[in-house]
Amino acid sequence: MNIGIDQISFYTSQYFLDLRTLAEARGVDPDKYVIGIGQSKMGIPPPDEDVVTMAASAAFQLKEQGALDGVEALLFATESGIDQSKAAGMFVHGLLGLPERCRVVELKQACYSATAALRMAMGLVAMRPQSKVLVIAADIARYELGSPGESTQGCGAVAFTISADPRLIVIDPESGFYADDVMDFWRPNYLSEAQVDGKYSTLVYIKALKAAWTQYAEESGRSLDDFARFCYHIPFTRMAAKAHQKLARGISDEELENVIGESLIYSREAGNCYTASLYVGIVSLLDHCAEDLSGKRIGLYSYGSGCVGEFFSGVVQPGYHDVLLTNEHQKLLNERMELTFQQYEDIYHYGIPTDGGEHVFPQYRTGPFRFAGIERHKRIYEEA
Ligand code: CAA
Image (cartoon, rainbow, N blue to C red; front, top):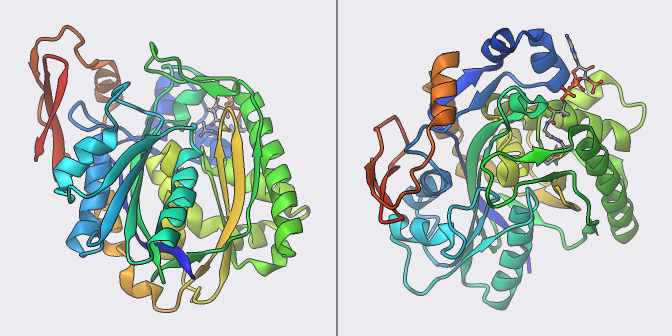
């Protein structure tokens, strides 16, 4: 049975900071961010946007397409959890009006958990081929102000449905995966900024990639030549480029651009979306690739610090253009508002009140849903 991604949708916040603005404020050469890191802008969520509203906004576009009919499970991948007990997906379930007959759970393993969700979703669909699973990955990448990680912040969500005979990508059964208990990147429950051993994290990312790829190649018998394109986990776009250069030693700049370039366009605009990043890359590839990818195989690498890496693949399906939401994605990015540096820092410092009182949040621009406030420690969401 063919199982895979039936339809996919991307959402990021309506506000961004240009990395040249950040560079000027921090006294850094802008080329370091734009060329060395490979990022142009970073999505900044206003106080009334969080992983729930971004996730619901991404999935809402699928709902409008009728793609959520038949969904029996919602798997929510995030490392920006909002509650120690209640799954963020429960709020999304309510906002989207999903059926009561629905399994809902939150998954965590840094940026990897959306791929774990995809694999679990495939298992559920294999057991009940008439059903669908909605997978949502949503995150806010946040580091300390003035730290090396600051320029790699961002935010966004990707929602996709997993079904039998999918219209977009059939996921291959072969896979290479790797785990190692390391401290390259983490966020203790009492901190709102990630801690990171930056250089080390890039080395572990590559080590996990090599191990996962070697295993995948042995299991599948495929070589790099069997892929039309590659999509990587994208903490910043230069990382994906370096990763591919490690696998395809001696690759020319032109060929590198050809096999990964289209997958990096949205990430350069939105910044790191953690769990969603690989999937933002897939959306970006499908939305931008001028070549017809029907029947072509794409290589996929998912990485979550801590760490787990998985190399897997999928075959793009004939007619895939008909289910793309390219116009919606491009409209969203084109209509975002640019923040000044002062506005960025003000939003950064806007902490969620923890006193148990009643708080109403200022209304910014969001998608169809907003995080309206908090009351007796309960988060309140509403239609925008
Ligand atoms: N013009 C052009 N390039 C310049 C430049 C200039 N003026 N100045 C510097 N550069 C280049 C550097 O040469 C370097 O390129 P190379 O790596 O090819 O040598 C690049 O810009 C970055 O410069 P630095 O290495 O000096 O940057 P840094 O140490 O200040 O920060 C970082 C880099 C450590 C990755 C930091 O951004 C960070 O900590 N980021 C967060 C962690 C992260 O994203 N890790 C990725 C792997 S872990 C993962 O993938 C999970 C996840 O999502 C977090």
